[in-house]
Length: 170
Image 1 (cartoon, rainbow, N blue to C red):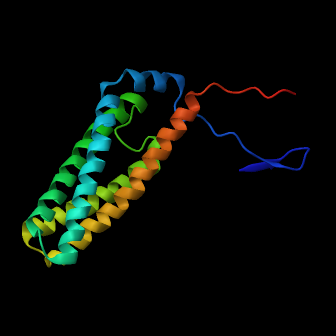
Image 2 (cartoon, one colour):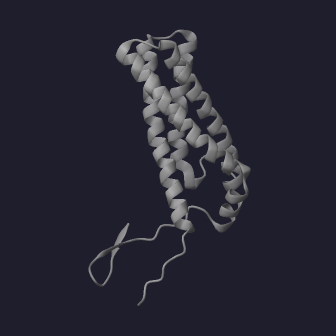
Image 3 (cartoon, helix red, strand yellow):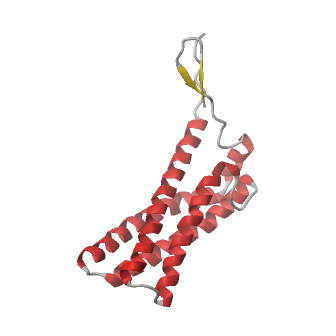
C-alpha cells in the first residue's frame, strides 16, 4: 500500500519483517537451514539437467529412459526438500506447513508436489503416452520455477530485513 506525504511523492508503506527476532534466532540455529541451503541449489541443478533431457527427448525422440529417470530424480529431490523444509518450518515458526510468512510458497509447493506425484503415478501405472506423461512433468516444472522464484524473493527479503536501517536526516 502506498501513502502520499507532504512533497506529493508516493512512499511505500513499510512492510513487516519476515521473521521475529526469536524466529530469526531459531532459523539461524537450525541445522535444517543449512540442509535447505544445500538441497535447494542441488534440486535446481537436477531440474536443469532434467529439463534438458526432457526437451531433448521431445525434440528428437532420443533418450526417453534418461528423461524419465531424471524426472524421478527431480521428484525425489523435491520430496526431500519438502520434508526437510516442513521440519525447518516447524522449528522456526512452530507449524509444519503454512506458517503465515510462507503461506503462498507452501500453497504453490503443494501444486508442484501434486503435479510431480501425478507424473510418478502415470509413469508407474502406464497411464497416458510418454508425451502426456512428460507434459504433466513439464507442468510441474513450470510450477516449480514459480515456487523457486517465490523462495528466492523471500531469501532476498530476509537479507534486506537483516540490513541495518538507514537513518534519513530530517
